[in-house]
Image (cartoon, rainbow, N blue to C red):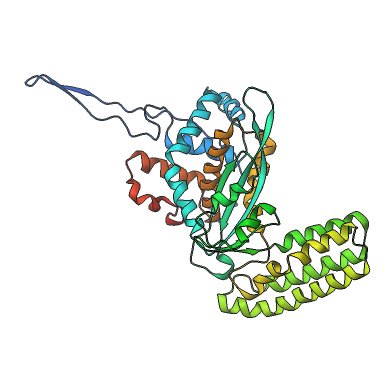
Length: 387
């Protein structure tokens, strides 16, 4: 028989992940002359005297905060593979890793607030109230630096914070050292930030067209109003013109914004005319009034190509929190909320830089265990790595 070709059939198969025990055998050596015992040092581990290696710790974190698997579900999965790890043990791991990586979290937050423009938003998080068996409502805030829309050189990053309530003093505390443009929704807690602050510098409001569109869209879907449908269509035209300038250099994008401004001015002409023709007490009037009240802040992006038309960057960074909230139901305490904010800061920043968060965390934990100098913490940032 002689071969004259071949057929290849590829079948996609699944090989389950596996645990392995790495044994470090350290021989004790006795010196017969000096009566001393010598032994190699114990292996460096992220958690001293712990039994979890960097890879397992990274996997637990990513499973919880990316794949939205609560710790009790992870414990059940590992038990099926013959490894019994108590949920409380994994909770301790999460807490210790959060503490260990806090300098890196602080570095990322400093990078975010050094930007000229950031996006912000917040979302509710149920938190177990001690001693009551019930939950209270905390908040997770996110501040996002992302200049890729105009080819900015600063790498993207997201900084998360947990607070036990939504008082206006919370964002004011987070933004105490920030000066520049703040793209946000119409939350009243930001108003004092825009109201003539001089130290360390002013914060300038940039409003969100996505919020304007959503309010008018809800009226259209709820009532079938043709007037509301017209407003939505005009905002869609603004977005179509804006999309053509996305990713262009600063000067080219600013030139494109002159076309966008035509659409923006047309919308406000329509809004003012519509307000004269409809009742001022209806849902549509409320939606249009929301936009007219913020006209200056909504128009500001037309004159500065660094700014965006909406706050979607911050909203997108809160989607993993919303998905996780549906799975793990609540945080165990305020401290647990702070830990979640720290881990989300690390993981979401890695994802914004197209870095595999599990591989990156494994490498970072390994290097810290090996004694990476604290003064060179910037070398461990996701944008400095190719993990």
